[in-house]
Length: 148
DNA sequence: GCCAACGTTGGC
DNA sequence: GCCAACGTTGGC
Image (cartoon, rainbow, N blue to C red; front, side, top):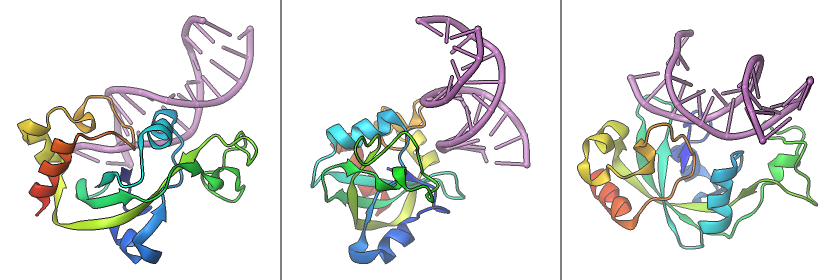
């Protein structure tokens, strides 16, 4: 799961109540579908910092809820407001995630690109800018190892 | 249903 | 801040 640290960083997550947050603001159908259809309680997640000085994976999280409607979508004051989404007919979904670990050092995008065992990751496929992407368990485990 | 125009993402 | 590569919108 990607986030711009200027908007929400792993520091922010650590400071959140119970080190848990609801992952709101996803406004891309494919990303939403991954949360809605594929993410299950207990799933392990990589936390990725995008669009910043040190781009890369900075820690891990765990999914702690099923998906449910993203209420910011019908909050007119939210920057994620979408007039086409209503409580009766929600268009956007989110899950809750809890911080599990912080890496000693970020696994930088550059390093990921240089690691042949990670060459299949969607993250580095040309043109892919999905903020939520599936990761295989071997990719997950290797990145965790690289972050230690 | 096409596609131009526009808005967004995200690495650099 | 630039800009390529996307996704979405909306007129027709």
